[in-house]
Amino acid sequence: MDLESLLHDRFASAFATVADGPADPALRRSQHADFQADGALALARRLGRNPREVAAEILAAADLADLADAEPAGPGFINVTLHDDAVARLLGQVYGDQRLGVPTAELPQTVIIDYSAPNVAKEMHVGHLRSTVIGDAAARALTWLGHDVVRANHLGDWGTPFGMLIEHLLDIGEAEAVHELSVGDLSGFYRAARAKFDGEPGFADRARARVVALQAGDEATLRLWRLLVAESEKYFLSVYARLGVTLTDADFCGESFYNDRLDPVVDELERLGLLRDSGGARCAFPAGFTGRDGEPLPIIVRKTGGGYGYGATDLAAIRYRTQDLHADRMLYVVGNEQRQHLEMVYQTAREAGWLKEPAEAVHVGYGLVLGADGRKLASRSGDTVKLADLLDEAVTRALALVQEKNPELDAQTQAAVAQSVGIGAIKYVDLSSERGKDYTFDWDRMLSFSGDTGAYLQYTYARIQSIFRRGGVVPDPAAVLLVAHPAERALAMELLHFPAVVTLAGQTLQFHRLAAYLQGLAGAFTSFYDNCPVLKSKDEVLASRLALCDLTARTIARGLDLLGITAPPRM
Image (cartoon, rainbow, N blue to C red):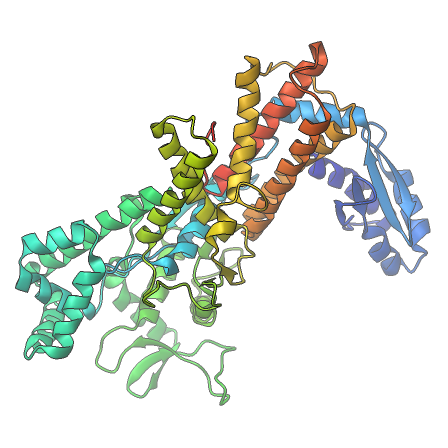
């Protein structure tokens, strides 16, 4: 059991004794001691008693003799200071644990994560960055915590634009179309089709006729559609490989997947009385959503002409995920601007009986990526920044820094480090920002080897590896860990906090807290390294300090991995 769970359980038992029932100890880390329990104040109010008297009773009932000293403080807080031998004992357990003390879920869930979701025949741009990076961090963390994670890449692979795209493909020939798409010129392909649709006589009529053929299941048209989808997927996978995310071809589950499920969705909603006519369209009006005029807001399920709105696809998806995949938790990693639409989909699913407790659907919202001008990040020409171009620039800039700082590294190593640092910088600035807020994209700050950056954490890891190389030593897996020096103890306390941080990240999906923890750990290691000689130490002190170095490196590497960032051994 990790330290904070152990402390919580000890205090929860004592609180329950005094409260004659469950009561939250409200345990947290403190600047005045190792931990502070604030729950006595709330319990005293509940019991109508003096908080310090309640705190004293809790301490009398608490089983802490082998773990910590505790005392009342202020109006009724309880300050908790761990025994040094308890810190060393618990740290030794973590050192010997490949999972670094992080427990797996007692009740594993089936978690579906809907993220990335680019559009076929369109290039991925900076707007896809946050969904892809946040969603992948969620997938990594929840998988490591023991949940059954299903990655759902909800491609935009169906709809009226495919009429013009297929007609443009026929105009230029399949071979040329495949070439354009294979080199990643999806935007050029799409723009050319759009220009013809808007300006070339007869093309729009052909495109509309092609949409009818596509939706009717015409095999020749479907073959061309599949070609567009397949070439686009190849491009998406190349971007994912560069970005280092875990999405694969098996995770593509586009809008077209739900085509055969749309009629049953409408039929069931009609049978349940959840659809009403609105201007000729069939709409759901989930409870609790009204416009500025006070009128109920609709989800358009079937359009006036008989086609389906994207709301129908979203409802089909949540029905499939709850009824067929039996999801316990569904995470929709989508921008903040989609919050209301998603909440309306969730409420409709509840009213239809598809989404029932304890299953839950969660909007994992996020803010925008801004440029220095405070607007959405754009290229100098004002166009949307292509994600592939952003990754290329990150690696190029990182390579220049690596060559300047470490010219002695061979070219192959420099290139590998630049890849790790450049891609890591993009991911870290995103994940270290509070998810719901916008953040400003700043190359100089992102790629700095000091401060709150991914490069600083990677540098700390590489620095630890250099200690082992320089000394020609390896950590002893049987080492007894000592925490005699204050800097050793401070580092130990940070290391013991890792399980609680990871567990919380899995619950809240607020990865900036994991990033902040890793920064604090790196800072504690720097203080330890400055104050506690490692290679100059002897015997059991040397063994202990090498073990502390190793445990710190493993923790940083694991934390970065959960964020999707690699830790190179040299920098």
